[in-house]
Image (tube, rainbow over all chains, first blue to last red; front, top):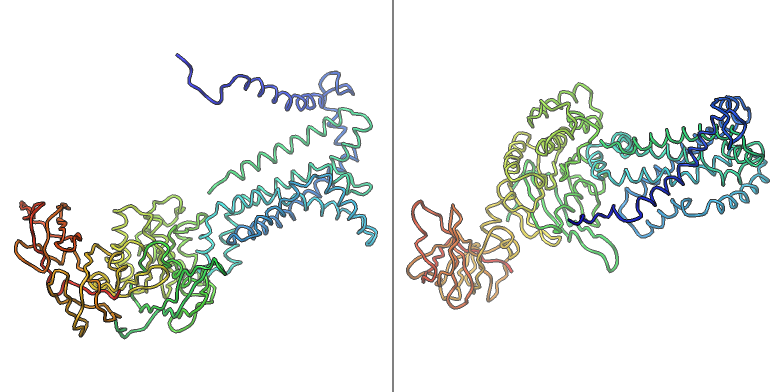
Length: 266
Length: 365
């Protein structure tokens, strides 16, 4: 008897899938394994050790870059989430009008414009401001990160709002809630999972950024990724593997949280 | 129909609502005026797109009229935001807050009005009792059935004691049996609370059974306002006659219009006395309507005559379709059934159709 046709079982599918998974995960597995290498090499195994984690955690530059990364990510993700929440409310709590699609495109622009272009543009723009104001602090990096994090925060929040019955806010207004009370008591509690998801996504995206940060940062403003990039230029030690492994773990934890939060429906 | 004395809860005066602009402008409401009395169960009835929901939304404050006034006990509220109107709404989708319990939902309006906690608590308890939901007070709204959600929505809208309660097709999501129960429940709640109800529906039966008065709407206009009896027995125009119940349309020449009555001479030559719709302008020929149950089928000669074509049994009654002599139109007679007896006619029989003195109505168009 002939087997029934299934789109999932076609010649080559399994092979292609296997190749893709190996290409994707093998390097990461190798990287993680060598983070525990006793020998100062990323290719020759010299026994199990945690010494690279220990040395990384005592490296003043690593600590400095990590703290800076977290500081920028926390502030930028918060600002981006606030802006994205307002943008999502403005674009969903209104009857469709001509130009709305254009506004979606404007908000999501950082997803489409090549990062290198944004990086160069910000470099030129900020250097002018630096000359005028003399200010060269973290503000530039925070502003840049906020800008490109907005669409990542915006998408889950908007998705949540679009699934929310508009008549709930109407009902609140009907029951004497002012616009602010309706937002506080009805919209915000129902939107909360979306906002949290947006915040976490924005945080991870900010933490991970290299290209724009590389262009915008002033001297002594390395974030963890740009520090790692700089170290690699001087030759790789398993310390980089250890930092990468810690970074990977953190990202996995946050993305997992994001997944559970955004899946929550009540 | 002359206005009866008594206070008007809502007066809609010359209200227009236009959506879009320029070439694409559509008048959802075309200069509508209507008065709704205090303590009345008033129904806006019409097919979808007739403007009934638009009018309700204007009264609720979810939208603003392009022109005209909406008075609530004499004050123009047309431009007030919804949270400043002492008017509450029961939504078609119920719109219960999913993150609150049944009791929190019911208390929401009172809380927004900054009523003391003790008063809110007492009022919520009272409302729960009114809709018989005491045992489910602490449930989430997602954990109760559709009929129960409907009752919570009602209790929530009634709790702040609105001057007018608006109901936007609230029964349409319920199954037939539950809908019948809720119709009775709604009438009971209205009697018990004494609040003016404005009810929107496209279901003519619902409108007839529940309302004190009905406004029939079509294409953004109110065609007729009256009691269920008026609307059913004395439809003003063709749309109203056709939309509500079944009707036979006849053409007649009209003479001697006086005191709302006239003599109508049918094409068969017979002359009957008929009531005349308000706003009837004398003209040579007019449309006369006769409800199927107001005509009688006879063996002998009568006002109309024809051949029985079809007999449809409905349990409580039988519909007999008669092809009229001369005009060749179909006329339907509804006859109450008796036990163990046929309707007395068979397809192909010659029959007369008797139309009594109070059986026919002359339409204005």
